[in-house]
Image (tube, rainbow, N blue to C red; front, side, top):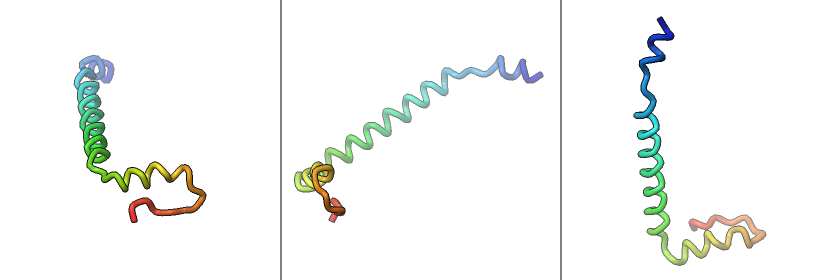
Length: 58
């Protein structure tokens, strides 16, 4: 019985749905990155170079 149920499953829709989620997430992150101001992007870029613990958002 379980073998017949598993044989009827179609996983191609899952792959397409996962690709859609990936593309939407990628575009959302890209849009957020493009909206950053120049000062904010410079602060984020300088985080690995500084020894102090600082909040780049302030």
